[in-house]
Image 1: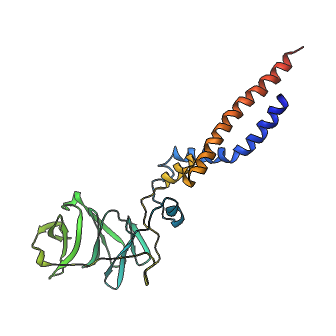
Image 2 (image 1 turned 180 degrees about the horizontal axis):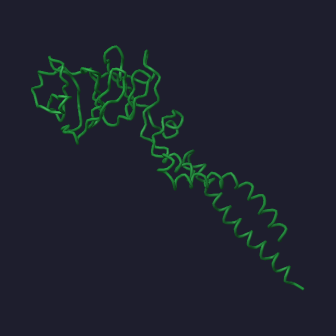
Image 3 (image 1 turned 45 degrees about the horizontal axis):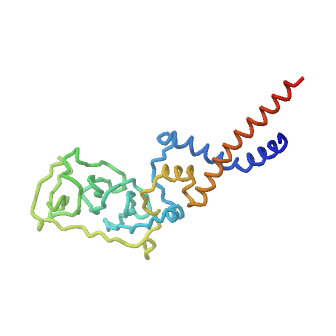
Length: 243
């Protein structure tokens, strides 16, 4: 019996090793999500397809001689150049003296002509709320719409002034399907985090019910390895004590 358990213990251990390695590495990663930056979103199409996540359309606005694009979730681009994470509803972008401005959710992003970020203007700076549209008045001043109310913003003093709607020409935003003709190749927008992917890999859910079953079987195998190891160790110890 001891010889049988020893052989069984060895082969089951070898079969379970791959799962033990995966569970160990992913477990360590999940214990240090902040240190490893696992809160970042995942944009690989094959991973999004595993989760059944449809790729959102790309929002596009013509700004000066170039185009500003938003991936539909949280990333802002100037053509194919990544500018930063600009989460929330993308309300558009317009030129202003000395650069241009984009609006995402309850923040305004101010860039210089070389697309360097100069400032983020948010609720703490007096922004009335989430921006629904961007535009300009006849004098080129920045206009924005919040909860149906048009405002003018003085970027020098950060003074917000409510105005009538007919004073502002709103910048149109196009929403195009990914892969449309002439559209730069930018990563798919996503709310899926790397932490969620590693958690599903740890549990076996990443590849469906079959891998969940394999993870369950590997857990049972580890329990059996512990029991068989104790039995073999106990039998060897008992034999040593026999005179």
